[in-house]
Length: 147
Image (tube, rainbow, N blue to C red):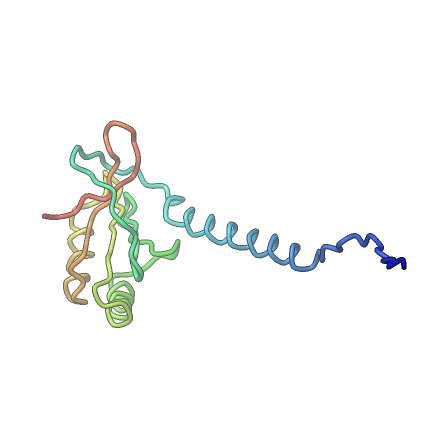
């Protein structure tokens, strides 16, 4: 008695739709992360240098405030007055308790403007404030935190 099997070789079909979806999602992810990384460093600011600069971790609710040489305050590439900055910091402190502020000030920026920004942070009860500086050996932008 012969038991025959009709074995037909079937090629497995790989569905392309999920693969294309994954590729597009990865493309969108990389585009979005590149845009956010470029926003904070595109402002024309010459950062000062510091020997004691250390790399800090990024936090949720972290705001980067840019101070230009002429005293202009920029947050997310939008000019802010002191009043607008104060209301923004109040909202951030409410939404992200313990949030951080990094001040990227031009080395020729006015100290009085930086003090006004620090005062806004104090009024909003934001205690985690640091200044961005260039590390002397390799020129990488890092934060200088107060002890």
